[in-house]
Length: 350
Image 1 (cartoon, rainbow, N blue to C red):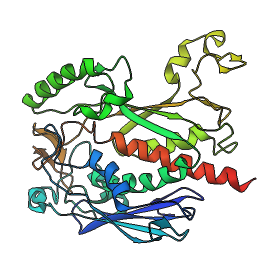
Image 2: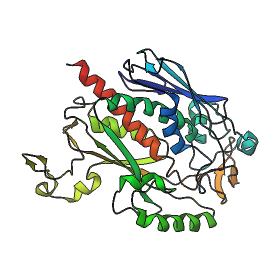
Image 3: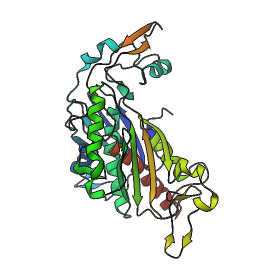
Image 4: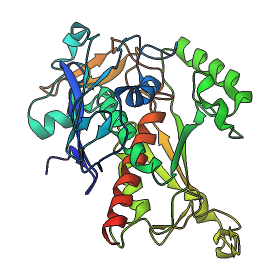
């Protein structure tokens, strides 16, 4: 299996490259009679669209989606949904010098090692541009979740060491960083400007909060809900770590501290992150993802060429300073795809 398809019953295959004519997704298994229009998808696409934030890449893509199949008179038909997003603002000449040189921190070396050929223009299939297709598919998955009242909220938890201390979900998208804490936005901006002046990049953390999820989603033992969520989130290129609930902090707790007491109204705490024994427990599902700094920076770096000879490289082109906040809707989309798939799998067992 080539690894371009995700899910079992709600199956999504993405296709396309950064500088190809288009990219898109094919969704198989979406239930019929769900309302779906291009505008529903473009709302999510706008949140990861390049050329919007001042600290992001200057590449300007309208990210308009066309629904080619699977929708009739505004409703899904139960047949495969095909989505296409055309690339409009490519400057492939910016990557000419990378044809025979590997960029540090990118997939150039590993793609060449695996396939013996690679698309050097913007990273090809390994580019974050591919994630537009995931976001489009995730918007369709949300239609499945809407029927059961499941809400997925994604936001920036940390950027460049500046961490949100509270979550005001009404404020997430009224600032350039998708930060739910308006009191730290100015500190994030100052950190971005500081690092921009140094010709460097920033990492951060994204958090996802799922509410309304019924108990029992997940499949023992290898398809535990938290295992597949971790797989889904880690499949996003810049993600280097995933935590569920207390995550690594649980390693420093006593059992008496880590257990979530059950009370008549539910759980008194949520260090489990809404998942026990690989199954949702009805509480909020809390996922945190560590996002690495963007590897394309204008500083001189050591590398090698395809002949193994040492080279130095300053990466040109149009690049974000951080994957945040444009990665926020991508991670949210992967959570939606996972939950939609497990929701359909649960229905299948009655």
